[in-house]
Image (cartoon, rainbow, N blue to C red; front, side, top):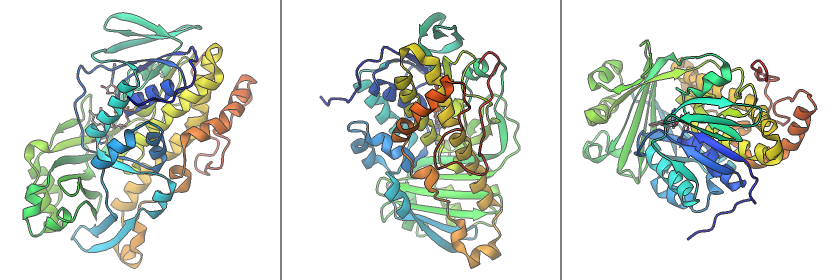
Length: 445
Ligand SMILES: Cc1cc2nc3c(=O)[nH]c(=O)nc-3n(C[C@H](O)[C@H](O)[C@H](O)COP(=O)(O)OP(=O)(O)OC[C@H]3O[C@@H](n4cnc5c(N)ncnc54)[C@H](O)[C@@H]3O)c2cc1C
């Protein structure tokens, strides 16, 4: 039975809503810092849903602090030397390797459901009180506590963390109004399946018979990325393309291979062969929704905090949604630890002050990368193929949320309690584009 590092009890009771990566990470980190956690998840049984998800080097440090987790993640993760870019006709352009990232930390890419299960099992093994089948329908807060209505009953604590994902109703109490997700104008066909058929095809077998591979084809307003995982035995691809569908409540539908093929007229035969080898029942049509950046992540009395996609949905091209959702939980656990049980609202405000600018800056990278690929001028690219490479920026990726939060938290708490504006946060990665961006308080906050 492994032993788990944990600070002495802080006396702070935290209710967390949603056991996605944001909620699970916040629960584990709160447990590590000695807070007492109840984690509520609406699904009755966690199933290994989803397909490929990426955790960048900035979240690798977080996994590494969780006893035994990396040993379980490594065998199910993607391992390739680099990403091979082609134009849509199949001409090889450039390989991007991840040497800088390797110095900055561990990257973990793999099946979302499988990684999620490893993290969930870790949280359970730590003894965290995780309650499945608990659908939260409302939130409340007073000057001395915050709570939720769950399955018709009220449950209260010192604070509530809303980690309900992009559809979060918790946003309503923070914003004071209901905002709905908006279509982004793009959608992704996505899938994950056994690479058995691909291994038999002369045009596709090089993608799967030599271990893992990572390959991209870039065309006008579309990109197709494919990855072989588990020593080439499994395969995942995503095609991001324009989509004007008006999304209401649902944005995930069964995919149609014929529609995918229509999107790929004139594209390389190898890409068509990959689509043909895809089992139709494994194809998903995933409309990309976004929300306007929130004016604040916290409720008027500062006892309820939004984290993860509930606070800041990311486009997949940022490759940061899951990593940023984990940074939230790490930071929040530390700001609560340092604020103490008597000052929980101050701790919640410090969480927002530390996270706000960094998250908004990271969100922007999703649009920048999509435009870099979708609006590519190939005459220029053939002169400088590396211009296709994903930007690997130290401010984003060479970052560890735990030491960072410990570095800045005392100063932030002092400034907030003295009513001094916090430049969010007081560190080196401030950027010209977001310099000075500040949360806007809801009335009474
Ligand atoms: C089923 C699923 C599949 C996904 N697949 C992929 C993928 O393949 N690739 C990828 O890059 N990203 C995927 N994502 C998104 C990705 O996991 C998130 O963008 C990122 O990890 C941030 O996670 P989050 O915890 O903020 O939100 P989410 O991962 O959306 O988790 C939110 C959690 O809150 C629970 N919840 C919601 N409302 C309530 C409520 N009222 N009461 C109690 N619980 C509630 C949900 O059931 C869910 O477990 C998927 C998300 C989900 C939920």
